[in-house]
Length: 223
Image (cartoon, rainbow, N blue to C red):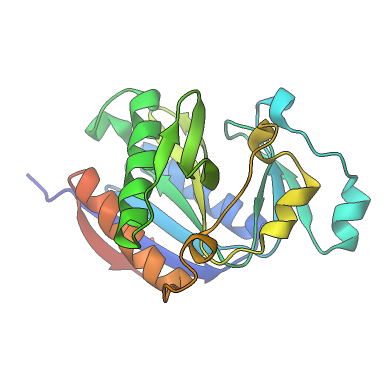
């Protein structure tokens, strides 16, 4: 039997539109079997606000013109959840996984994504936890990572956003994930003494995903 791998593709900084098209194409190729291993795409985006399928949680009290004036793009996408922000200093991950190789349960999958991030943060001595009733990862009551996924034929795309050195003031223009009163935080805010970069956190996150899902990680330059 072929080894079960996790292909890790780090794209560096790329536009949201480019990576959205890429992950939709990669998901289609994962469904068809052209890509025969699970794939974790890691990326950092220029400032962008995305709206998910949960319309009630898309609480964005500013106009698209206002966003444009601040150099922020806006996209409506098929993932679950509500409004969120991606930008410099934030590690965004898109796991394109075939759950038929794992467990046919999206709720289980969401908990696994949370667990991988919780384990990653533990490496930086940040005690992270779940918040019952809400998808994502918190520490000390503050939200440090957002998660929103989509799946077709049991193949996932979209994923998570972990604040590493993110400018958190961007979140002030919205109600992140539609959660009233939520306070956002980041690795650098929780551990200002830690020497963290997007790349080091990306490497650790990939390692934790591979271990948790029982896969052998393999860094690739393309798929």
